[in-house]
Length: 440
Image (cartoon, rainbow, N blue to C red; front, side):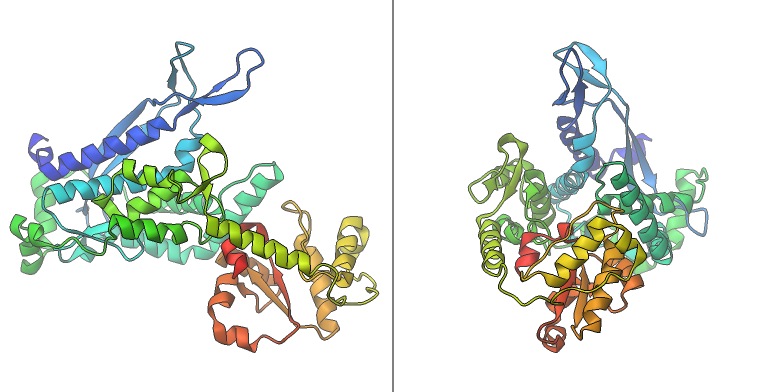
């Protein structure tokens, strides 16, 4: 064991893991319920166990790919200094900021590689990095490729399960993050396909890995070759700061300062420290919305919101009704509901340029659209249905073929040019769309 863990790169890995877990600890909370109190407070500590593995799950043969990684098991305990006792931990903020914790770990690891003189390049998706000089990476990514293949083959099932969990939680009054639920389901599928590990000696594993390498790959793994690789595809700290002003608010009007930090770390890697990234997120480049709560926006987003609201107000009651006088409700379910039938008549007869119909999950918004859209088309009015995500587009297309994502419509200028004047645009799940996206 000492032979395998003595290398400096392994020590840099452990150091990066420890710093990332220290950030996680800073976000740990506990609930206070003594007397009439009912709130959560930060404790700044966790009880966790780190288990470090050096291999991935085997695929095909019994020889696993080399993959140094850590599993951090957090126990349901934290120390309340004020009360002087162990209590159950509240992991809300730890889980919510998991992406930033991951970005911090990768940034620290890349910084450690810089200290060792090892060049790394940022991946195209801006989520990770690879050692620049090493060749044949795909040979030792068999487990990752297997997971991606399973995800692709189960993409419809993943979307269906994600929508089901999000809607089931909404019926109970809980709001779940769609992307995080989707990630959880992907992880579950990955675990289900994992092959049981076998016990091999270090020499057996090394021989199995070497048997898969060409002479060129083996040469690229030598110390001189690894240290000859360039550090590339990273943003400078200045470039990263400029980039994040736009990228962080591309899909959101308001973000948390730690989201800004995470994006800066992913863009600049070890070129910027966590402390500097946090200082920038708290600088005058952003507008703080809730004091110590950490949520921020930008002056650009605020101006876009004001201009958009002004345009909507200026067009109140200045447009002809889509169906003057309305029409009889056809759908029995809509007819039985005073709210749905009222909403349908409002949409047909309103003189506003922009109209909004809101409702909780399961309230019957899709049923309402089945009444409203055919009525408009029967009057010769063109209707274009848009959705904010690929998943919601697919769901919408089941009822209305031809529906597309908002992003596709906004980026396809030919499609915009073919859209008839007077077309009614229906944007589903508008609460998932940011001010910058609506402003476009």
